[in-house]
Length: 146
Figure 1 (cartoon, helix red, strand yellow):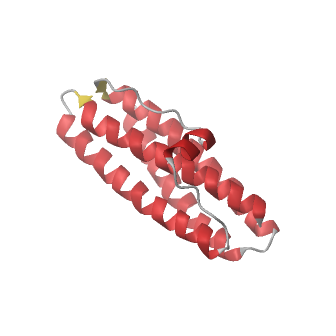
Figure 2: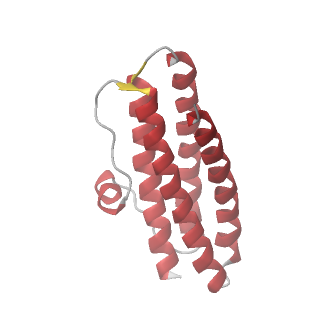
Figure 3: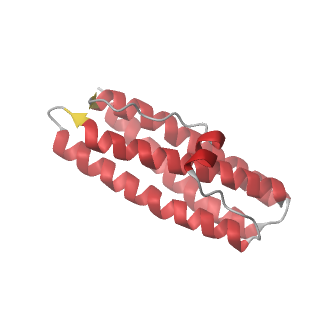
């Protein structure tokens, strides 16, 4: 169970850094599609915020200790922070596609380990994330087609 808690904390760290990144992009997006992208980014970070709480509480439910400081998150993330600068839509979407792929890999790996350890509570939770991230990635990649 200890390795699942470690992996869940890595996932939690990735979610927290991604949340900040999405907010940064939300504040700094520029271009002709500003209003649409600004709103979509808010939708994404609101959803990620809910997932942060859900994962932290899940870690507690399985008798683990969730990480809770920015220092911890930055030491355990594999998602790169966004710079504090104005940014165009293509840069934003390329970055968040990459980040959602990281998150999808996180939850897929956690599900595999949870199944091996018959931790079906964790496994079933990861199913929801696998479905959610897969759909978001499909939609983002469709949008990037030109």
